[in-house]
Image (cartoon, rainbow, N blue to C red; front, side, top):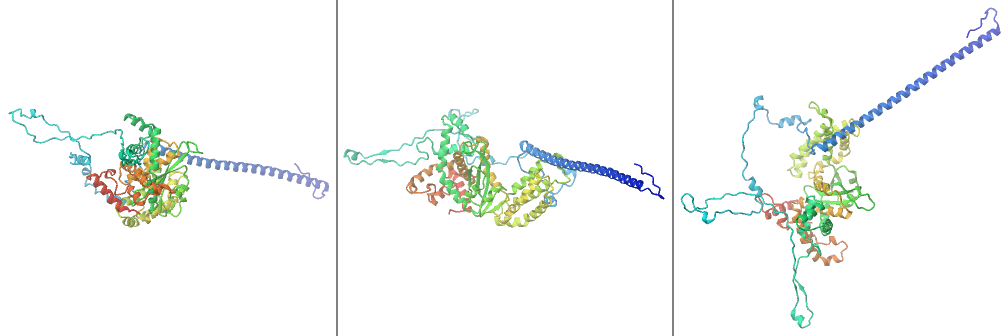
Amino acid sequence: MSLPDINIDNPDLERLADRYAALKEMIAEKDSAIAEKDSAIAEKDSAIAEKDSAIGRRDQRIAELTALLDWYKEQFRLSKHRLYGSSSEQNPLQESFVFNEAEVVADEPAPAQSDEEATETITYQRRKTKGQREAKLENLPVEEIPYELPLEEQICGACGGDLHRMSQQVRQEIKIVPAKVSVVEHIQGIYSCRNCEKNEISTPIIKAPMPAPAFPKSLASASSVAFLIDQKYTMGLPLYRLEQSFERLGIDLSRQTMANWVIKAGELLQPVYNWLHQRLLTFEIILADETTVQVLHEAGRRAQSDSYMWLYRSGRYDLGIALFEYQPTRAGEHPKLFLQGFDGTLQTDGYSGYNAVENVTRAGCFGHARRGFADAIKALPKNAIRTDRKTLPEQGLAYCDKLYQVERSLHDCTPDQRLAGRKALSQPILDEFKLWLDKWNGSALPKGLVATAIHYCLNQWDRLIVFMQDGRLEIDNNRSERTIKPFVIGRKNWLFANTPRGAKTSALLYSIIETAKENGLIPFEYLVHLFTTLPTMIERSSAKRKGASDPANTFDADIMEALMPWSQTLPASCYLRKPGLSGDQSARHMAEQVQTLGSSP
């Protein structure tokens, strides 16, 4: 827009007004153009901001997906290792301790003088040590089969003189006698008085004394039910295999019949279980663990639901007791109720359900802490493990291995000696380990195996170091894991329990079996002893049991202690024979060991 010309000497007011209006309109147009440009710039800035935000969200998503992909790769490698690799938790890099290289090198033998000496190979043959075979066979009964020349052949072929027996040659074999089934008839004589019968006097009927049967009105005997329980719970055989086994032995025993025998056996052994429970609660240290079990017919629950088998057992320095308990859930109320009255130290893994147990000191498990780092190493890519530097899980595992190395060196010490050794040797390692955990907390892949292992150690730290307060405590809960393992192996064979009643019976019988094993007994022989002894005890205590509110707990303490697996009155046949000891000597040896662990209440 052009402005009208104005004569300055003789200004025209109208033209001046027009010029002013034109100027004002020009400024308005430019302001409008500037505003449009500013708006366009603002729109571009907004678009740029949106793109930056989208890029940020994309980068965040990429980071999340990358982390998730790394986690899946880690889990895949770990699953692959669990499926195809070794199940041992031994550290494949155990020979290289990152933080005590000087000590490791100092413990190694001195190197050879030269390369030639280092590579020299010496080969030789070594005779087998004599007496190994004899030591293996010395506790077995011996059946001798002599081979002699007939008298008519004891004539020298060279001169015709008589031969004499100058020596003998013995060849030994192991003979296996498989199980056999036979019928035992208990014939009880019944007597009356003929004189009373003739004179029509009240005739007394007297029966010959006979042991009370363990399973009245049944074909089941103490040995047959003990064999059945031993095969199912010690050897892990399901009932359908036992049914086939009995069939080959010439007897038809259905699974239903055997299941009923097992249930009846559990009812008979209930007083023994109850007494073991009472004794366990008097100890100062209890270890606990739990595992899943499937029960098909349980009211209000699907067959696929997980139920739980809980384990409570004694520590290393107490009488050997291992008790299983079936419960439909993993709720903390179950250990709380089972351990009611216990006020000692409870050692478990990190499961929070045990927090419900009151008035106890909680001890943790370094085995689970170590396992986290071991799993992280198994999940590492092949190119991640190097000799010039150690990864985070290798460093964490090295700390745990150093603690276990100390425990191995103190294994045969007394509790007081072990506690002093831990204060001197383990405490510095724990202090350094805690600093390392604090340093690397939050640095590893979130929710990855390394981060999970570090978080477990930090969250459980106060409980992990409780073993430093008592030399009787162990560094981990592996003792209870070893005890629950036979149940886990058996579960792979029989897969599930049919009813809660059957699961409870299994818990009771596993308790008797594992407690017997803890005390060096042969489960089959111990069960035969219980099934033979308990019916007579029940019969003698019938008067006392009539008015009792809890018949299972009405036996006297001395009677129950005589039935316990640590009792010194058990038959010698119940004990595992020690090399070089007879059955009676093995029984006395085990009794002496038990005497050092505890006494009757």
